[in-house]
Image (cartoon, rainbow over all chains, first blue to last red; front, side, top):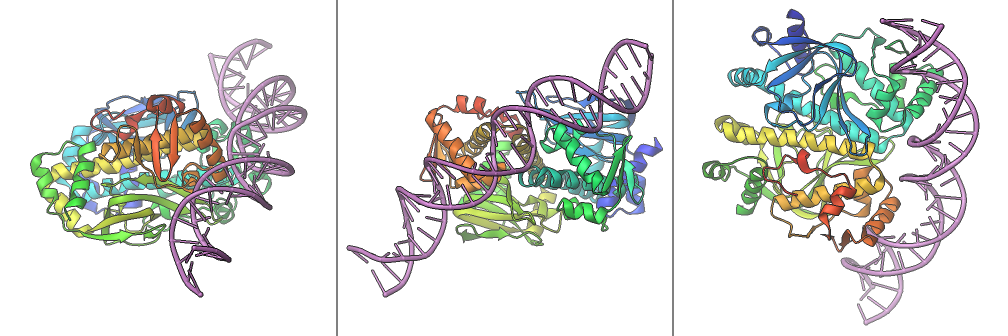
Length: 242
Length: 242
DNA sequence: CGCCTATTTGATCTGATTCAAACAATGTGG
DNA sequence: CCACATTGTTTGAATCAGATCAAATAGGCG
């Protein structure tokens, strides 16, 4: 599966400095791809996965459902991401990974990854960076949910997803695929979907964005960033993305 | 500084399986301790730290301040924690680390840690686990802020801090030091301090807790846990703590 | 067409914020 | 030892951002 390896390499290049040799080595990773649909749970809370999952096409989210039945989405993933790198070191999943719309995921046996990283310290470094960036994104989300208004949160989230897509080459200058529903957005931001709807209307009215048919268009990225207090530092992208 | 090494060992033992030899090796880590006071910023946002910081006594929080001036606390740290392990792999700090009340921190040169971990794969594993647990805690906080009521959030946070303190041997059966002010708690949970005050009053009235003079007493941990939908799995503690 | 899911709109309600002031505890300097 | 600044907690009242409930509309699709 050339595509899966391409995505992974492109992703790692967006956050780390890979040599041609590194890239070549990555292509040696054994993996099995699988089609996913709709809201499918790719990894379940409580699982003890033996494989590590790589997103190839579509989007994934990591989420938990509280005992009282509320869903919280903790991160949104784009192709090339390894959303459960943690399973390399922590045995039990403390959250689920679900598809958002149709897509493709690839699975790499944990043992293969561990073995691989042991022999390639440069790539081990890249993977470690990736795990830490993951935590940095979580922290920014904490800020977003805990310290910003609905309007700011929404703008911020849209900027993040757009820039992540752009960093892996899946966005044009102004648009990117956007399979998340308003309900999904609400669960990302700790808001109700009704309120998300109204907030999006405002952003549309102000001609900052357009969001329809699973396609996001950002008319004025700079304005959207300042509306959401968005500063891309926390993404730790190698080249300035904004 | 025997104490600093003791704390670190105790902390790592709470989440990983160390051998006597590992512990001995850890005592070889070179470090400089320093007294900290009040709200002192130990590491600043934007810094490029050359040392990695270990909390010895007191508490630390990681926090950001948004452009509009709101503070968000992203984690609370207890003695033995390494709150900026990320600086080993990411050069720029995307958040600050501040003291909460008086305490002691120790600094270990990044280079020394890196070198050390290279020669001790078992401990490298323990450190990696620690970094991933950090992210797991961030995710639980996202749930807490995004999907729970003020009453639940507060109960949950109190449970977490208490169990973390207990895991490193700094709590008795029912009590632990608790230097956070109501304002700090508010900034942890995305609430106003006025509302935190009222919520604490409720928890006191229900005789679940007592909180005064920087000392937290939990009268009924089980009840507090269920009030906060608290499930300690995400802390990934080696032995059941609850 | 009828079914299902997503978006939109309106009306109402409430948890939490904000503002303001009082109160308590602690420390500081004269 | 007292006046007084300082910081944290507590209380009350007014207000608001966002939730909830309910229903309408719109789009895919078998």
